[in-house]
Amino acid sequence: MTQSPRAPRLLRDTERAQYAADGYLVVRGVLDAGEVEALQRATDELCALAKDFVSDTKVRDVFFEVQSASGRKRESAVEPGALRKITGPSKGSAVFAQLRRDARLLALVASSGLVRPRVVVDQVNLKHPRNGTGFPYHQDAAFLHGDAQRDLRAHGGLNLVIALDPADAENGGFCVLGGTHTQGLMRDQHGYDTSTTNEGVFDESRKLIPALAPGDAVLFHPLLAHGSGVNRSSRRRRLVTLWTVGSGAPSAH
Ligand SMILES: O=C(O)CCC(=O)C(=O)O
Image (tube, rainbow, N blue to C red):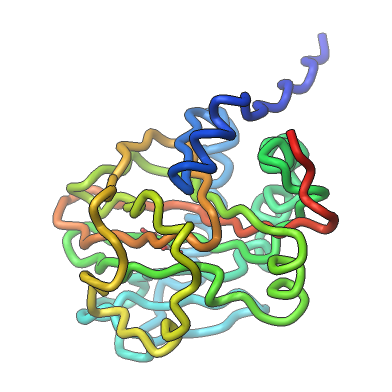
């Protein structure tokens, strides 16, 4: 018997209202166990390619950023193959390429009001046990360029992270600063030092680190300030990030 595809998970009115107010929304189980496993395996395969890397390296347009002791880019890895981030895994993995086109995920994003969303950035952030460093607070909208930046401004965008491992405050879980999406874009973010936390720059009064299970997602506004802390635990913490932009006037739901 052939299985019918799972119906997309769409946002309800109350969730859209919550997203608009907070600038983020936690959505549980956007990927099922099989989908998470396929992405975990695909991540392992990419990591195997990088097992001897001691510095940041590009392979077939996939960029492997190593985990340095300070967390800064362009410094040596704490050990061969220790990675902080893989940018563009879809360029080296069919499973990640499929995720970029995933109709259920794009329908979820579209249900926020974004018209014909497309993914413009895909990444995996790996937070190594014990020496995985944090991500300073920042707004992703500051890091888009060219057509993607144009479409973000014209049609809006929505970013999401999807947990591949259980994530919480102990292992450097994803951290959102609720409400900061209403405060505009802070210009000066490119030169930021990834060994710092950028504390005190954005309003941290509504800070939250949601505990995530594999397959859970956080949807967030491209202007929402977010980041994460160091991984002090013995558990790794991998998450996928997808940035989307719309391609038509946002629809009113
Ligand atoms: O992986 C994290 O904890 C933070 C990710 C992030 O902020 C980003 O990729 O923009």
